[in-house]
Length: 83
Image 1: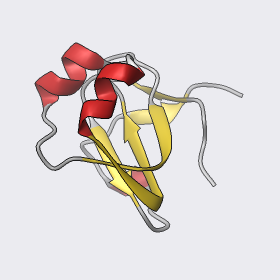
Image 2: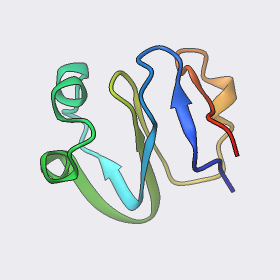
Image 3: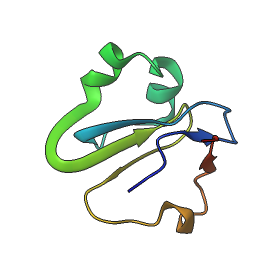
C-alpha cells in the first residue's frame, strides 16, 4: 500500500502513479520535465506490465513491481502531501 498523495519537495509537483505500467528505459529528465502531467504525452514512454506501478513527478521517476521502500532511495524527494 502506498500514499496516493505523494509530493516531490525538489520540483514541488504531485507524484503521479499509473497501475500496470512501467517506464521505458529511454526516459530521461527532459521527457518528464516537458510532459508532466499530460497523460497523453506520457503514454509515449509507458509500457504495459501487469503488476507494476509507474511513479513520476517532474524531476524523478520510478517503476516498481514488488514491495519497495521508496524512502530508502535517497535521490527521491517524495513525501506525503497530506491526508
